[in-house]
Picture 1 (cartoon, rainbow over the protein chains, first blue to last red):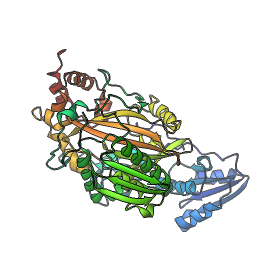
Picture 2: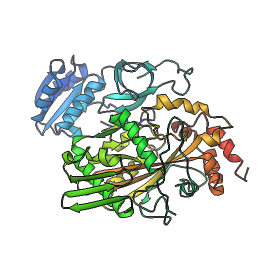
Picture 3: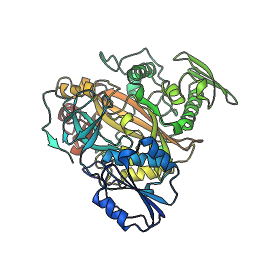
Picture 4: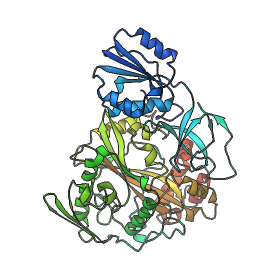
Length: 173
Length: 339
């Protein structure tokens, strides 16, 4: 979980290739929905005590409960969308896991969750900027400032300074 | 001369805020050199400048006290989420309450009084007509949670940082007059993350050095640094939350009104280690001074012109000055004999 500077914003996560944690005796692999190839390959290479879980059927509460008894020597490998990765990572932190015990594969989609700084609503599935807030309807400029707690990127009304000056639509990645 | 709190003035709508001659004189002008550069400009938070100086006391209570407390009430009524404290920060909030009450009562006995008998405390704030008995450490005995309670009685914004995992995390705060950031969004972030959008400082290693310095900050040895930006109108609440309401004012500047409408906004940031919780409290106290008032001090006018003229473009853009920076430089140039 490095936070190297990308596009000038240090809070944007950088996802480096994930390796098995050699210090661990127990490995839990969690996929949000389908198990991606990268996670499957890690699982196949793992010779230790291991388990795999698909998240689709588990609630956050169930997950948190299972993490409470997570072994001290265990490592968690997560695959899914970016908001999912950070939501589960934050549950893991609450349950007392340290950052080395939580390994995130690169998000399976470039869709972002967007935090509207005006009404605090989170808009899902964002791939371009500006994008309409699902709460207050403002056209939001998407930034790379990322909150692990919210699993979302910061955004603000794109034409607040000059209502006639709406930025051109651009893809975000 | 010490400045006494005056009647309530507004930081919004009709903007009745003014600085008296004494307030101008004690304004914490932030530029030590003609050319502005980022640095970890930290110094011990010790008294400086003598009686009446903005640095005379741990907390500076000035003529704007009642106005800023009234403004804070307006913001919190509208958006209670401007104050938040994660459950594990409860002790840190009590630490902060104690630090503030003790220093206010010692430094301003004419305005504040604190009587302590074990955990039974009696607090009086004569400026706001508050008189409460409570049990220290027991939030149920206060009218509001401790941060919310004391934060409404002290000028400036507050962020409380929890220290763990080799970093500092912003897990509590009251932020009603920020220079374009959102506590609700930045909550829970590490020191590096919440400085994420600041240009240049990461590659120059400034954030990392500042974090290491703060993590080693001892109890009882607070430090301060100054930060600054320019704000259109005497608007305290330039939060990201309200950017959709104040952003258009940046486009309202003309060569004719620039001196009146542009304010130098200075933050005196005090960083202090809390004794029980080991949290670090950051107080961000904002001072506003119009360019018109600033240039009444000839040395400041010259210095201000030169720092604005040499400001790197990345900082002009980051601080949101792009639309009017040129007009500010032109206006100030008339006060600089080097031109």
